[in-house]
Length: 295
Image 1 (cartoon, rainbow, N blue to C red):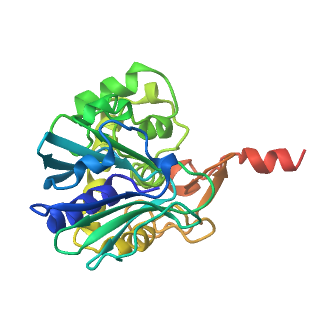
Image 2: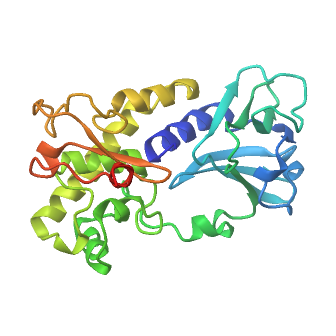
């Protein structure tokens, strides 16, 4: 799933190519992706793109239309993506077996498709007068790269409810934009078990976690920015130190290989990766799925 760094890079990429352009085509190919019906997506036609921004993992294209500013807002979920064209195909996007969910075209012939692979369709598209009309945006937590995200605020969030720290990092209502992959990376840098209880954090550990969140996300945004949309997925994979690297040598929390290998804990529909030496005192965490198989 695209997380804050990739979504921020997509927003910058689209902003640089669409601001000032007039929307000439809006074609819905997967009605299941469309979560709002008034205003209709066609209300965007003839409008001028003012900006493309981000709210957590949500993308937001602001379009000035004759009836006022509208926002095309979308969440790529696990299997969605943006496919950019300097020359958009002339054939209209239509419902069918194609992965295309939505096609948007501009007055210079360029445009993009929102696509979604697989059979589990979760991509969400909204057309609204204000982003806060989307409940999932209205309830987002603090942006971790904003000035509002201070060590003091993080301390309050950690103490608010005792839970596993990885769960807190992934909770969009607490901190916006971090998902499964970057939470693994952050916890490696802080040398912390993903199952550590949040109320066990003292001031020093909180400061360390805050610094890791900022550094890991900032480095990932810088690495992703400027890359074409088609290259962002591979760039994310290449930048991961532990996430998605089960069985590979751990590069070390500080960039010095520790001699251990990356381990995994599997769940019903996801998994996490970590290093026992760097994060759990050398003790592997129980893999619940494997434990069930051995009973």
